Each structure stands twice: as C-alpha cells, then as structure tokens.
Length: 214
Image (cartoon, rainbow, N blue to C red; front, side, top):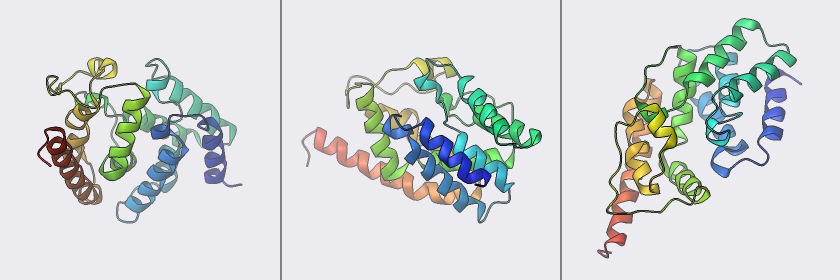
C-alpha cells in the first residue's frame, strides 16, 4: 500500500461512526476537490493530499472544542507510516489553520498547499452538498430550522463562533454565503461562484415558502 491508500484506510476506520457531514464521504469529496484544484494550482501534491485526507480526522466540534486532538492523531499516524518530518509539520499546520472559526481570526501560517486544501474544504460547504450538510448538522444539534425574530450574528470572534447555537438558516449568513469571497485560489473562486448562486436561489425559495408567497 502506498501512503494515499494507507491514509484512506486509516481515515475510513477512524470516521466510520462520524456525523454525516463530517464523515469519510466528506473527506473523500474534499480529496477529490483537492485533486481538481491541483490540476490548475501549483502546489506540493503529497502535502496537499495528506492535508485533505487528514484535515478532519478529529474535528474539534466533536471533541469538546479541543483543537489539539486532530493534529496529534494526524502526527501519530504519519509517523507510523514513515512520512518525512518536514511534510508532517506542514500537514499539521494545514490542519491547525484550515477551519473557518467565524472568519475573524489572523492565520499564523500561510502556504499554497493550505490555500488549495482550504478551498477544497470550503467548496464542500457550499452548493447542494453544503445545503445538505448544513441541515444534517442542524438536525444533529437539534437547532431550529429558522426563526424570523433571530437575526444572524455576524462578526463573531473565534470563541463566540465555536459556542454559538443559532438556526440552520442563519448559518448560511454567518458562514456559507461568506465563503465565496474568502476563497484563496483562482480556480477555487471560479468553482465557488456557481455553488454560491445555487445557495442564494435556495434561500429565496425557502423564505418565499416560509412566508406563504409560493
């Protein structure tokens, strides 16, 4: 088995009982998005692929907000399969900096590989898949679908975003509709626009039906 096959096998086992929006199929889609972006964006293939496959190996949302679990597990796995130290360090930096976290924090790490994997991950939070994942997670957390009297909370700090419990529709305004303008790469921006437009059309339809206009 090469390192990709070993990593896929490991991630499938680790995430076999994960919430559906953050399971192996999410990882697989981000991996495919990463490969698509690498066709036009120049970046180190091994680092980007490992970053994509390991970026949600232990999402802090499901570990009481602990952001150290994912990097630690990824480091232990990569050590076990003999990944070079400089590659491991870079992949761990991707895992530590990929998350949205409210969109209002200064990243301490920058690389082309992070840009590619972050765009690949953000694409999976947009469009039809993004809508499905958002409602799945909202149901998982038992959040209300929508409440006209609860406006979206914009400009949250990282900690406020982590602890925030709002409606599923508000999540579109608090995160998903912001992603288009946060894309890093030229290809990512192009792919994001179509998915963004799809979400806006969905919200128009949702609100029209909610208000009894359709």
